[in-house]
Amino acid sequence: MINVTKTFLPPQHEFQTILSRAWETCWMTNRGALVLELEEKLKSYLNVKHLTLTTNGTLPLQIAIKAMQLKGEIITTPFSYVATTSSIIWEGCSPVFVDIHPEFLTIDETQIENAISSKTTAILATHVFGNPCHVEAIEAIAKKHNLVVIYDAAHCFGVTYKNKSVFNYGDVSTCSFHATKLFHTGEGGAMISNSKKVHETLYYHHNFGHDGPEAFHGIGINAKISELQAAMGLAVFPYFNSILKERKLIVDMYNAAFKNTQLQLLKIREGTQWNYCYYPVIFETETQLLKIKQVLEKDKINPRRYFYPSLDELPYVNKSVNEISRSIASRIMCLPLYVGLEKVDVHRIINIVKRNIC
Ligand SMILES: *Cc1c(COP(=O)(O)O)cnc(C)c1O
Image (cartoon, rainbow, N blue to C red; front, side, top):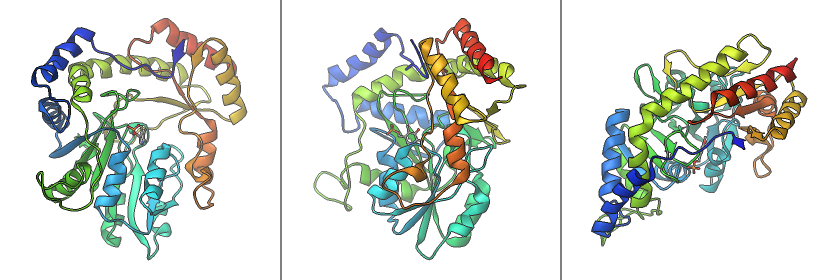
């Protein structure tokens, strides 16, 4: 069975060696030595000033909306994972969708200003498949209209844009370390901000609002990551550069095979050092996608329709139609991409896809 992804696991004894430190101290959570060490390693690797690890990549979105005291309408993208939209609604705000760019697949920055109303308080956009949004244009719009900018950067571990971590753009960036993501802690995530003040408020919110053991800054939630999750992160971390290298080889094979076909491939924004996190292909029609998916599945290869459906089709959002997002969502599929995927299998996938698109 070949799935769209396969979790990278470090040698088990290396995980256990790190885990034994938690046994020795009998300390499982509440920001123990392993969490602190992982935070320092990630801050230094990513070159970001402030980063708080969390127990997943969804709570940071909710915390960011809550901590920045956002109300009313939040401009967002319909082409993302459901957590981007559900977090907005969960926090009592309304998502206002702006359609996406047909090639970059990120929010179409040229349409954002049209969507701003007197109730707009923020822009929550996703760097899709690690491809950065037009961050400069979004920053200019946000400044002009006094809006907060949050980036769902769940896919962006290791991505740089104009030589700095993509996490350094916007007021808050969030990341996911779910087991299916590029760098993972089983379940996990992070919130990143350049501002010390924003960082502190995010931090309090993720730990019940605590100001020391007996006082509170305000309301909070529990989004703390445990030592067990941090141990996985510390065990995976030394392999990250080789993970990138191995994934790049597979991406290069796919790119070479598909470049002169009718498939539309992801266009990466100029200035980006990408992280090879997904390999989406866009077919001419949904019918073609469904046919190829079926043929692959017959061969025990499981691609994934991702992102699908377009989030403006969710049953709990106000009706709106974002034509480009809906069209792309109906025709896009991610092909298998992971460390350990055999070259022969990559060729097999390529052949099946190519045979069936003509
Ligand atoms: C994975 C993902 C999330 C959610 O992260 P979890 O760690 O699974 O909570 C949010 N947004 C996007 C774009 C994602 O891909």
